[in-house]
Image (cartoon, rainbow, N blue to C red; front, side, top):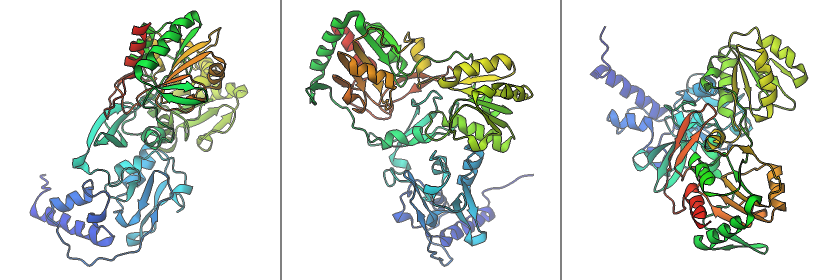
Length: 494
């Protein structure tokens, strides 16, 4: 059988449907923020629509602007239901649905509550697949049509999953971040942190070297700052500690090992050895044993949480939570037990065909103990920090400890919440240098703050929790020197 998709009859039918779309709701391309990036508009041009034969209805439809990152404008919705499907089938959250029938149909959140009061987790997947201006990215609205932007494929460096992302760039500014549908291991999905956090950062950027002058900060030249830093690091001798964040690139870690004296330590802690695995195992498991780890809103591993939700919702996989305290997956779990009831979990997991043990650094010891009793289980451990495995490979392999140190060089990158033990040690230290993208929280503990590019501005590589090496590609150019370059310049002065 031969199917002709571009016959005159087929084209006329599509033109008829397009006219109905435009007449049904309030589509005014000349005012729409998606003009130039709208699939409905593109199809109208493709089919030669410059008017329509049917009277407009001009319905009075609401706009839901209750969420921080995006708005829902029902006037521009064509009820394609892409948002409904991705929320359910890819993210597993099933926040978005449809109420009513026929021309009265409307996209809703949960039981028709405002998006801001719903179970929405702000992953933004619905935003990325919307073909019109119905779901609006509030930060990038009107900032660039398709022919005015460029797309830069990179790797998210904000957790150890290492998702593939695309930076949407115009005039040397990243205006939006989207998931890369072709990338491993996320296949286009991003969490709230990876998609929105750097574009909505409230902390103050560091763009020039800062030296403490009493209770205030003084801007200085790179030469003055690096000269002072080199002199103090040289004088510290064996009392120097170099602390590297997992947000730093492998190239920066290599430079720190090769150029700076002192003990090299991991800011977030050492990764737990858990062998080789692929995150795709989450889409094959029939039982999840999640140990002391929250994979939902606020955590760094939400994309893995999406896979677990998909498994529970669509494949009937069972979820067991082991740990104390509240967990965002509580409502999804078949059982939730404390560590003392681990044997119950082992007994149930032993009956599964493809169990998966999921944990982060907090649950590493218990997870390894469970794995010894469950030989069929796949062990999926998330390394602390986005690039901790990459740092270890370059020789930064010791956990942070004070151990007589009085001077510190901290490569912090974009880190916002360092551990209390590190902050306490820095407050007591004689001299602290921090290489960071933002002043906070380092301006309370540092003597010198050296600027560092964000992940949208730097080049390099990172190694995710699977051992997969991902390229970090700068979306914009900046006058700031790279992380590794600064460290090498200090090393040359020692």
